[in-house]
Image (cartoon, rainbow, N blue to C red; front, top):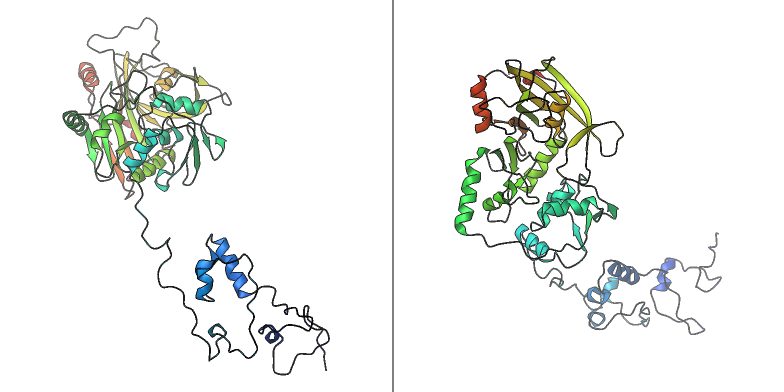
Length: 466
């Protein structure tokens, strides 16, 4: 016969009685000969329930299944085990007859569940609250799921509409912005749940001015007059020459500000997806929802969008169809609108830029109608590349530097660059949206003067896609 070793805490040398489990001796509260209570299991069901309640952040006394008295009285951290005479009937918790019915959990919901959570603030209320706290010191913002993929500067512009965009760029450039504790760059993309630490943002005075209903209607009518394509998710505008896309130093009227007149009842304002230079006319994509903006922005980053530009350039290229691949960097890194220079690989701030071009027509070996297909989207890419191959765009104040060159009569001294056509997957259906913009008035005048036919076949269509 095998004899079990003595159990810890029990009398030594005592054998378990036949037909009873070794755990049954812990059910009673009998005392040993020295007056001490028998040692129970190391972990009781009550202890486990209390620890689980503490882990959930709840008060263990409010969810006591052992009796109503414990719910009324404060529960000690580690209460002594209840003692019971051997003759007393076991309670209902032991599952034996003769005891009181088990104390059921209250059917009433807990205070946290008693009422449905209040709806969160709308986007308009969030922006208003953020703008109202501009001078409140350091703030920590959490990126929402529908803000995934946004550039850090666009994120700040959306959260703080009263903050000038130049101020946003300064904050990011000086490293005053932190994302998850790390210094952020202007082109960094955000993901849901990220923590954005914003430094104190101070304005001399509130710049928001009351807008009259008549002005709102005029701005809305003007924007709608520019629409080339529109549906429930996006629209494509024909941006005119001379209208800035975003605000800046001394810029009061711009597309981003005019879009406020189209703000919906839910507070969602149409938002920019990409940018064009102030003097570049043509196709400009606007997203109507934040989800559409994130999806369209991903299409640009993945180069799923195809863009074609038309330009009038000086001279005629010897190679009628070619490829321009360089690195571009700003001449003045601190200037947002600085001139771009051709740089070397590895130079500070240098980014690769790739453009395909094709000559559509030419006039007297003096002027060329060039069609561009940019693969990358660097600042002033087409203007810098046109100047790099020796054929700068007519009317370009930054990059046109041909010596002894006079503007032909009848041609206006304005930038002759048009975002002619864009093809991009629809943000919801994925089907391609193909839109073309007409020539702006000053380019249409030049085309008529030079005898160019805008309906002529564009050979850039056959250029490589990457």
